[in-house]
Image (tube, helix red, strand yellow):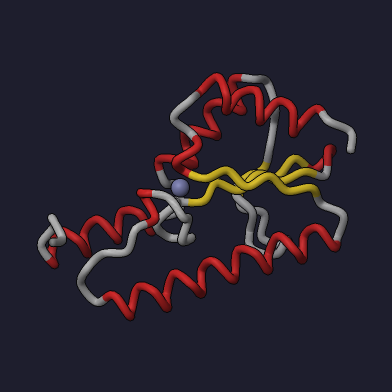
Length: 136
Ligand SMILES: [Zn+2]
């Protein structure tokens, strides 16, 4: 059973949908603390990427597991209106992949971080640093 009522669920969805989601804020704070400067949601790039590092030509996306259909516990579908969510999330997932493809074609390097990968801050720090410092 869905633990949330319909009303609670839509309230939660509305929260998750907003731009400055919690997972994204967490990554932003971490990257900022590491001393990197970035631009937010640059409009002239495909998908308005979450964090853009212009001089490095690198981009970090933070994907909510539910919204982008990650194959983890957080990405599980709600029981109600299953078909609706399956379609919606499949579209988000496809769009996300297409955006990364377009950016890579324009020689941007992209790192996609999933919400469920943010719990281990040490690991996350190593990953972000490695991504931003590597020259490949
Ligand atoms: Zn996940």
